[in-house]
Amino acid sequence: MSKNHRGTGVRTLPARGRGTCPICKKEHIKVLYEQTIDGQQVKICKYCNAALKNKAKAAAPVVQAAAEAPAEESAPAAE
Ligand SMILES: [Zn+2]
Image 1: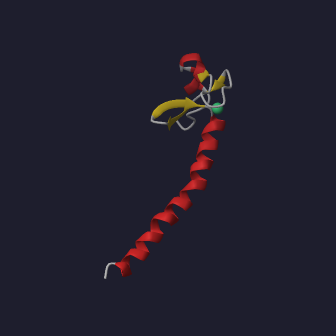
Image 2: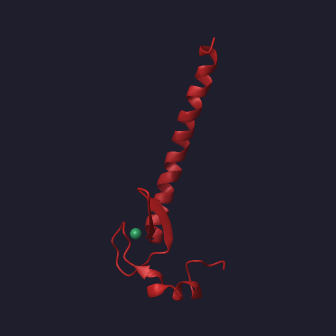
Image 3: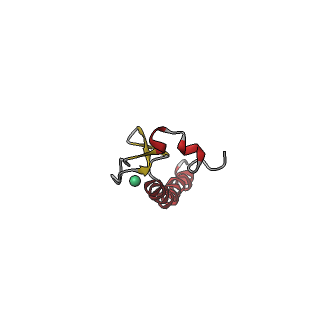
């Protein structure tokens, strides 16, 4: 199953994998991407999935840099 979001695989799903996206409220769109939002597992459309991915990617380096900076400073302070 290489194509998880196309063809025969989605035709077997209820409503052929289509529904209303909880984020963009688009109707009769394919909602095949599971995401955890506020602790709730929801199925969203590919556009919202891509948007969330880009958001996470943009936020990731900032979080990493912030986590590394205090670790270096704490070494001389331990004296
Ligand atoms: Zn959406």
